[in-house]
Image (cartoon, rainbow, N blue to C red; front, side):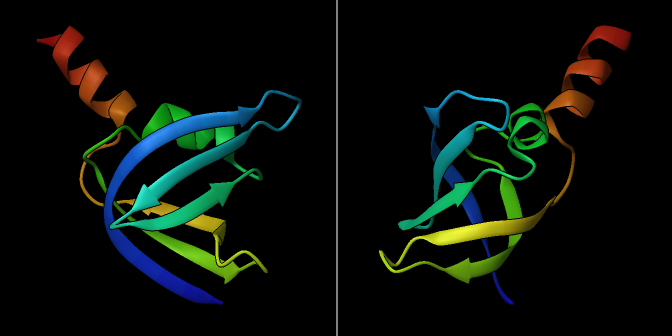
Amino acid sequence: MESLNGIVSSVKILKMSERPLVYFKIDNQSCLIAGHSLNFLADVEDGMHVVIGGEYNSRKQFVVRKYAVIGQTKMMMEFNRIAI
């Protein structure tokens, strides 16, 4: 398994289903996530710093198996904003 880290941009939902397929970029590297895509959408937005683990597919897209947000997730920031 390889890992990448960087700033997330261009978050898009490619396919709506039981497990949505989500496309995003990390420093100009195309990435796809399906396994934990709903959690990813709740945790991450453009401009956030993340670390991802996975492997490349035949189209040179990075298929994400694991991810971690560096700092606060989107849900944590919203909770802190409301709580204050």
